[in-house]
Image 1 (cartoon, protein in one colour):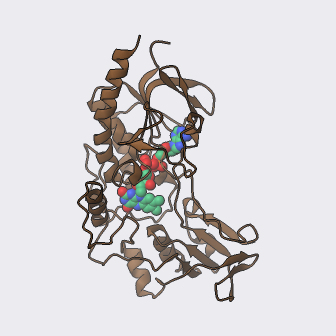
Image 2: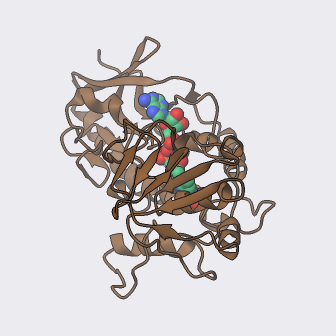
Image 3: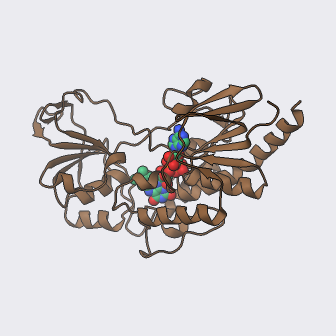
Length: 356
Ligand code: FAD
């Protein structure tokens, strides 16, 4: 084969894939986005109904078209993000094939071949993987986890508090997800919040934009050593503030082990627990890249400036700071796509001129 089906195939049509598409279009490159979702919105369509962003609207824009101020003038809701992403891809009329799940990316001569789970395949000169983390929820391995007879749910699969009304619920994890789910569940359930260390709450007058500024500064090597703020610090969005007013925003340190009816704490006391909600983060969803033999045990891939070191036709967008400053956020997706795409275009031009 001398010509691929597309010069570039972007796997994943969430915000990271769309941001890459925006710049590929501007560079005049031939590309196709393939996305496993039933519709637009990436992982946002799976998040819980009441989710509020920790980044204000002005800090949640993709390239070219600012996030509209929205109904809530502080932190957009998940529905507002889904609506924004839906209108964003329609506005630019990107070529998107969905739902199509990529099962495997493999080498084929000078191309990479994308194999779909439902059959069929496409060849590309370059592949951008932008599959996010939602499909790979992470749950830490506490002793006795298989013994626990109650409900266990990762935050990735939590939607509403209704099923937990009147129950004893243990929420595990000290980031924004843990704090927001604690705030919501504590209104209907008897909650305990368990975190590895004391959670870090940002001051009320500091919103998520400081997290972005610091993540970016760190990558540019101009870190302010006196500040300890990280992207995992808890932003005091309205429901979390309200939980603090009710006195429920208090965390305990981890239990020693799980038992069928609950947990045993480190001092030997036991608590009955009906449900555990694991707000313990995600890993990169990179199973489709495993045939290339370059995926590390934690799902990451060695990259230099978003290009896979051991497979230079593969580029990574989104996922987290390891592929660019705050690349797994709305604002960061645009910045990192802007940095990556000219390099990708250059590599493509070289590959085309070297082709027989
Ligand atoms: P995703 O949105 O996950 O999109 C990946 C796409 O790839 C999906 O459409 C999926 O269907 C598709 N896909 C996956 N595997 C395959 C495959 N094998 N083949 C084909 N397609 C595939 N960010 C902010 O900027 N501000 C915030 O306030 C904020 N709050 C957050 C709160 C929570 C609770 C969480 C979990 C995240 C938050 N984020 C926030 C982070 C971030 O914006 C999201 O995680 C975002 O969804 C990442 O976008 P993405 O495009 O990288 O991945």
